[in-house]
Length: 241
Ligand SMILES: C[S@@+](CC[C@H](N)C(=O)[O-])C[C@H]1O[C@@H](n2cnc3c(N)ncnc32)[C@H](O)[C@@H]1O
Image 1 (tube, rainbow, N blue to C red):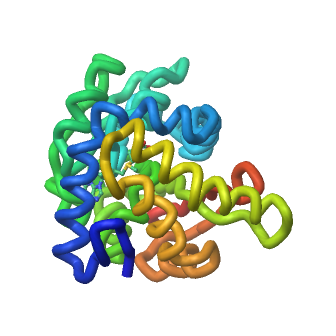
Image 2: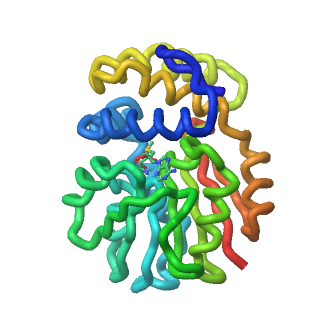
């Protein structure tokens, strides 16, 4: 259960409509806040996520960026030297996609729900999800859908926030994440709760081991994980058999 200054998000529909409304409202300031609040480290994390995708084995393939938002992760892939395929960016908040579309002509935004993707089985050569899975109302269904639309041997790469291991850095980070970030986020985004929802949703997300287990349960093989910046974020990957 996730709390916001307006109250507590109770059920699946509640969370779904909260997430949609919130990203629609903050869309114009989303990129700015991402880079400022992460001190630009998010750019490095995105580069590392694309580095794990193994797109070099199919540079002309069609790739899916799920929960694509303003298409930053998708743009990171299409801009790679040697990449000559296309990247479909799927998100259920169209204003986010519209803002991202101008980042590169080869991006293909599609309004779609990650829990019910309008794509055929085995269509994609790879799939990325950046800071998206934490927002899904049904994580298992979302991962199953990602698995379904990948061709055999193709890779899923998930970039998601985590929490550093116990120690002084963790305390400092949590102070920033739970107290500074929500205040700055509220002022810049002009949204009362979006940046309080962020730390709450990270706290509610499964830990690294539990998420890897879930990836295996929905059918991914070769599951791996890597902490980024002392565990503030994590990369996860797995392949469709
Ligand atoms: C934190 S943003 C991440 C955007 C982008 N991937 C990035 O790396 O900056 C999360 C995105 O997930 C989208 N999202 C959440 N639940 C979704 C769902 N069920 N289907 C499609 N998109 C969803 C939101 O609309 C939002 O754009």
